[in-house]
Amino acid sequence: MISETSEEKTILVTGGAGFIGSHLVDRLLSLGYQIVVLDNFNDFYDPNLKRENIREHLKSQNYRLIDGDIRSLLQVEDVFESHSIDIVVHLAAMAGVRPSIDKPALYNEVNLIGTLNILESCRKHGVPKLVYASSSSVYGNNEKVPFHEGDRVDHPISPYASTKKSGELMVHTYCHLFGLDAVCLRFFTVYGPRQRPEMAIHKFTRQISRGEPIDRYGDGSTFRDYTYIDDIVDGIMACLKKSFGYQVINLGRSDTVALSELISLLEEKLSREAVVNQLPTQPGDVEKTFADISRAGELLGFEPRVSISEGLNRFVAWYLQEQGGK
Image: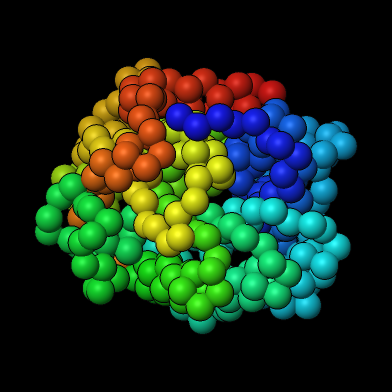
């Protein structure tokens, strides 16, 4: 793994108050980087949770928070004009497959126009490097497993997935035309402390611990490549001092877990039996995700360390501690 010393770099983290962003900022601040966070604290979930994510960050002299929206080119350009940005880690996005089906226009505005505004500002202000958060959802219902970056991704099955693939294409265009050095990281089902409350692991943990029914879509045979947040942050950090030209890299654990197995593991960790409400498979949900991480290993020295059992132990411990403090 490459060295993580900061060399006084200033990094703009869009969406830096969210789940992945706040964990990344934890690491960056611990290493002495200068951090600028741009986040609009939208109400996709409780904005107070995001405020809590950054409570400790606000105490650092190396941290600057800007409450702004990437959909506004004027606001984005003002950030670049006011700070000497060396690297952009672009995490801000409307997330979630199912909500994108109901609000495709919003997802396009944030994920496409917002990303274009970031790219244009990088070009105008000479920012040399971008790390773009893509998603395993771009693979759709790819029949070949594990998913490799060279696989065709021409058949997304949700508006969210199509915006993430479109973002990759826009990043490639700016690399080709303007010499931007960029990497698109396809994240595979990230979980851990501070995970968004509507995501399966967080939602199931909350509902099982309260004795509430959980909604299981399908027969439980769908499977996911669950990746612990610390491993994802390791992968992002490994990108900061490496040149790519343009590259797409999977970040996953390369180890799949069936939905039924995930529920059983959570029952074990919580010492409670789940009450399962069986529902039909939802439109936009893929049947499986499974990352081929050979490219990440070769280019980044990426080696995921946290098993699903250990990761769930950590998540449940965090969740119970949070609830005990309320």
